[in-house]
Amino acid sequence: FLEDEMMIQNQFIQDINYPSDSYSSIVFEKSHFKKVNLPSHTFNRFECVDCLFESCDLSNVELIGAAFHRTIFKNCKLTGINFAESLLQNCQFIDCTINYASFNFTQLKRVVFNNCQLNESEFCDIKWNHLELNDCQLDKSNWVSTSLTKLNLSSCQFERLNLSPDLIKGFIVNYEQAITVGLTLGLVLDEPR
Image 1 (tube, rainbow, N blue to C red):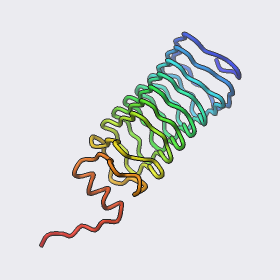
Image 2: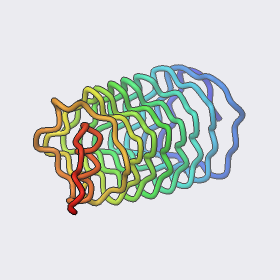
Image 3: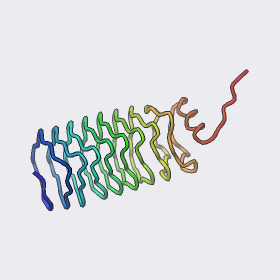
């Protein structure tokens, strides 16, 4: 199914399990992947355009420097996936488990996360434009060196975030989250007597 320097176009690929491997220069275009399992694979020079990944397991996959355009991940297991230094544009993650993932140094343009688990995931030094996180779990996620101006996490759940205090002006949270963020920044709450 996979080999170096290949393009997969207009395909429906279902119920495939592959042992860990490394590939280079692969392009997926206008394809639907359902129940495809590629855990612990490494992809170099990877591009994905107009694709749907449905109920796939891409846990611990290395996609450093990849490009994703108009791609949807639905009900996928992406635990430990590494999107570092990648470009994700017009992408959606719906009902996915993405704990322990790395999005460090990634460009996220018009990306939506709906009802995803992103606990202990890394979003350090990302550049984003029109990033939405709706009803996501973000506990212990790391946002150091990322501007949170106009980022709305008010529908998300977290008990702790790692963030850069100088980059939170305009960060949108609900009242309960404001206390959590304040405590993270070192505020001390005085209990009424």
